[in-house]
Amino acid sequence: MGCFFSRRSDRRDRASSGPDDEARGKDGVAVGRYSWDLREKVDPKDYMLTGMKDVTAGRLPGKLNGQQFVIQDCENCNIYVFDHSATVNIDDCSNCRIVLGPVKGSVFFRDCKNVKCAVACQQFRARDCSKMDVFLCCSTQPIIESSSGMKFGCFQYYYPELTFHFKDAGLSIFNNNWSNVHDFSPVPGESNWSLLPEDATVLDYVPLPDADSEFSTIRVSTEAGKSIVPLTRAARGKGSDESCLIVFFSDDYTTANARKLIDKATGKGFVLIQTKEVSIRPEDVKRVFQSNAEGLSEFITKGQVVALELNGDGVVEACRRIAIEVFAGTKLFVSENKNSSSRDVDNFFNFADMQMGL
Image (tube, rainbow, N blue to C red; front, side, top):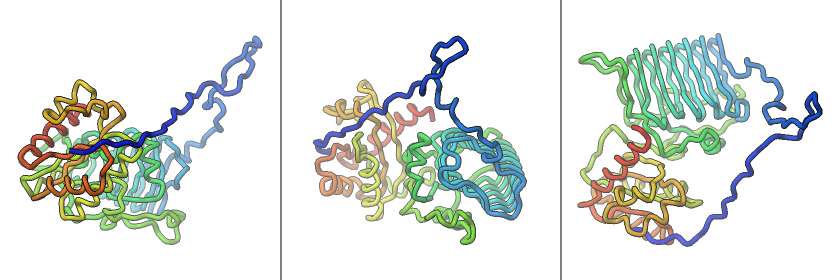
């Protein structure tokens, strides 16, 4: 088991925003002016890429700032959207390579073929598409319909602003259901989707920005070790009968600590199967942690927890050793032994999936 964490965070709530400076209506009564009343008029063309062929295009950080974006009728293009957005629709595109920064809502591909992409979003949908290779981070279950030749891998990408864009889009790097694909129109005896090779990297499918393009100034990496999103094995299965559950309770260092433990454990040859970031209510603590629930109610009230499943022979002992050597003073849960660890994993992730509607 973990030990108690003594540092206290000094978070400050952001002041809620109200009307801006008052203006006077026709009757002289003060009328509140809101921020959207003061915005400059936007040009819809700034939020669209349409009819492009054989070019490199996209948007640099700060150009979308959470707006909707449309990509349509593009052929043989490299498209880089290094910003966060509200929703993205991609229609009638072929032979394109696409990178989409975090999308708060849905990414919807329609009537696309031979597209290779890296996408982070709340919801992924593809309809009437064929031969797509998708490196995906998706908070919910990805959905395909009337599509074939769809291949999925775990999102692996980095650029300097990406961490902030995930936060701006309200996405957690630990909630990634990339391999849990639902096919609305299955074909008996066939499969419309499959997984990309386990050793596949984004760079094998989507090139870095051209040196002579405006996007060359963005420091991009497609190495799994530098990816903002942890690389999970997910539906590829487990190589060992032994898994370990590690849960970090909320504090200012939760994400950094979880990433550090992943690096330590995978550096020893263990495999990250899945991750989740969820809220746990006091009344659910016993259900999730069972005999280990005593004393945990205080910590789950401080915010969402981050859970990891690591797999491999000897993983429980190794993770407990890492917890003692690296995370002394941090409150975390680690499976007590390999006899109970599988139950720990099942209890937590079944609960998390129910909480997230998966």
